[in-house]
Image 1 (tube, one colour):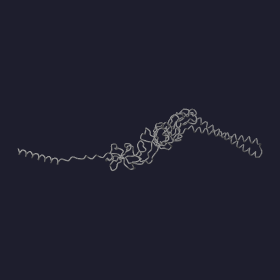
Image 2 (cartoon, rainbow, N blue to C red; image 1 turned 90 degrees about the vertical axis):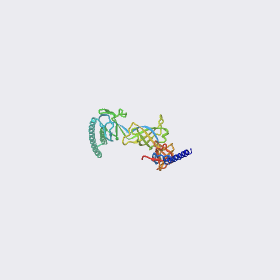
Image 3 (cartoon, rainbow, N blue to C red; image 1 turned 45 degrees about the horizontal axis):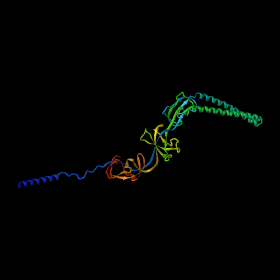
Image 4 (cartoon, one colour; image 1 turned 135 degrees about the horizontal axis):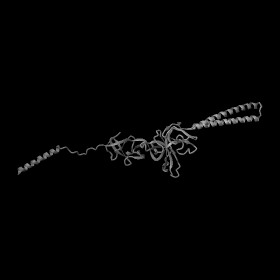
Length: 367
């Protein structure tokens, strides 16, 4: 019995030694969790730039100038040299009326002038001779006055004949219709053979021969509320946005601010002028007008995406994100002014900031 007990204790000792050896040779479990990977973020550098409040209205784009090409005289259209959509230069010949009748009138007026000039020259010689005789007292005063009246009548007839000739020449000139300014032919309202009479509806829509528009600059008329009209004035910066170019803003300025409201709508008419040198903006289409008010030209500005909970940003320093409270100022759709809490040159997180914690390590990605 004693021998069995000794053997059992020996086995216990051996097992204990083996177990201790196994524990000492096994790898130690990690007592601390593996360090988390840095959070990927995108950042921008805080800068000073212009920011302003913006008010927005929709209006119809109008051409800068529009004119109906109509001859000053009635006549039949002989030739039209342009078509709709053609670009024309100032002074370019656009159309002509038939001039056969005018050419006959020109010859008649030239002949009439020649006769009148001959009569005037004859009357002038008679008057000069009568003046010499009058000085010699060889004729009576009544005879002198009669010759003088004849001279004055001949002179008046000469002026009348010259005026008649000038009128025919003018009519010939205006029978050729030229572009009063550079622009685009918006519509062709007549055809060869049509009779045009400017005295019969010449100012009605689509009257005349052609419609010419100049939209190298455009104007947009908008109706503004009473709340906004007090914030608008001439020369304010404005932008025009159209559906054809959704990512582009065409810069212009406020040109007309009407201070009298429309009696029906109670709105105030405002006009914005926008340069259009490449003719990208088309007349009679809708556009969104955005007007800057209360501009701050040297504001500390960050993107809207940098703002968390309307009062925080994350600033990156040495690979660590620090949560910082800021005071906001003016805002628009993409930028926000920082009144306090940031300095120009600091790096703020604009992507990857949601869920980020103060003191977290970050890895800057992108440019």
